[in-house]
Image 1 (tube, helix red, strand yellow):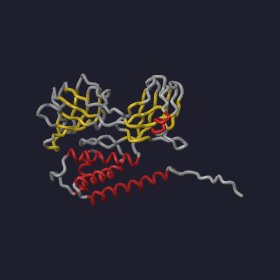
Image 2 (tube, helix red, strand yellow):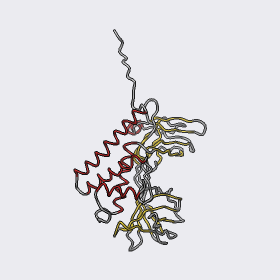
Image 3 (tube, one colour):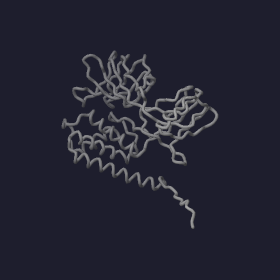
Image 4 (spheres, helix red, strand yellow):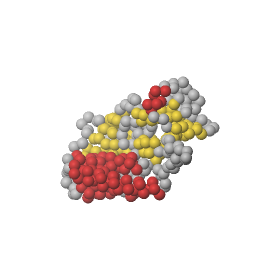
Amino acid sequence: MDGREALDALREILGEPVGSGWLKRKAEYYFLDRGGIMVAELMGLLHAEQAITTVAGQARYNLNAQYLGLHLRNESGDYYIKYNDGTSNYFLPFEPFTNITFDNQTTSVLIPSRFSVTDKLAQFGRVTGTATSAGALNTDTNESTLTNTGETFSVDGVQPRDIVHNTTSGTLYNGYVLDVTSETALQTAMFDNADEDVRRGWANADTYAIQPQARYQLILDPPPSTAGHTVTMYQIVKPLPMFADFRIFGLPEQYCMHAIYFAASIYKRRDQDFKKADSFFQLADNALRLIKNSSDTAYHKGRTMRVNMKRRK
């Protein structure tokens, strides 16, 4: 299901005709995006692996902005990550951050013994600059390209779903990063503040400001003493950002309608129609829980063996 089809489905569920003026395109896409994230988080559907290179003596490492949670568990039920020193693999178990803080192990070791995840203490700062070429609106896709040949977008922390503003004097356009296509170019979906149904592009010398999302960090404990080792994080991640007509969630098709029902629930809360909001939410939530229970049963997830260790008389 792409953005155009999702918008049609959302309007159909809400009973809002095209052109009613109550819902603007930017808001519709925002609600759909929140709905997709809710499905991905509840179901743990989308997975990714992030490779992180160690720095000697450094405990904290930035996770991608798409991170929602840990994915894989070992036979003991602990989440784990893979640590490779260039020769061997080590599988480090998860430890709550409170325990790592209390133990206060600051002396570096060759191979850390555990890991945790916590908030990034200092978030990425705003990224500002000037477009070095025009990025006209593609009227077929309603996307545009922001280019700055002197920029390093990924290094500066820019990732899909970040908010981007056109700050040129007299221009009121805001939108979202869809893709970081290179260090010097971003694919964006820009909306006119005066009429959020209208999409915009970039002119040469337009100025911009990008606000990176809040992030999490991986904590290695104790910190590694050697640089150049590789950590592989197994993650549950957010769906792809859907803010343009031909963008997709990346969710399996059977889950897309549930994302739309969650979006409808958010819309109805904004509309202060709490009865319908709860109805839409429960419809999606109950259906997803039934699917998850059936899936867990099919794959024997959650089954445990109980043994009575009391000696019989």
